[in-house]
Amino acid sequence: MNSSPNSRERPKSGKGKFWITLIATIFLVAVVLVVASPWWHDKYFGMAQNEHAAVGSLRKINALQSQYAVGHANKGFTCELTLLRPTDKTGDALDPTAALLSGEWSGYKFAILGCAGEKNGIVTRYKAIAFPSAPGVTGVRAFCTDESGKIFYDHTTSASQCLALRQVLPD
Image (tube, rainbow, N blue to C red; front, top):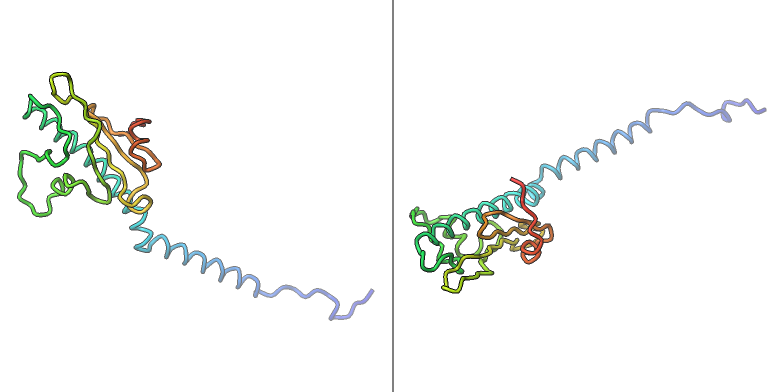
């Protein structure tokens, strides 16, 4: 057995702990910077705001369709988004309803389709859709509604899938 001082294991110094602590600290700072960065915030919280605005806009379309149908009893619902002007004018140059009725608002595109009338020509059914103008950037879900007033969604950003699957958005 060799008992020279050079053959025995030396006790470990604190250098290993230093590097582990340093790497953990760098990792933690990187995570904080990513979470707090404006890009991350805009990408994820911005999409949530856009989706919330899209759902609210579809609710607004439903309300405007009801107003339109009451005011145009001989026509029923309209098949044109631009005809859904609210009766209460705001006079605001940045009126969100005016922007919505142009077909695009808060990162989403809107359209009315699937209008169906009775034999007498009165439109009794419609479908309204909202889908991200830049999928994955402005939103990750498509939303749709119809004359029932219920809001439906689809996780694939597909308006046609939204209309076909009719997954009710929880309140």
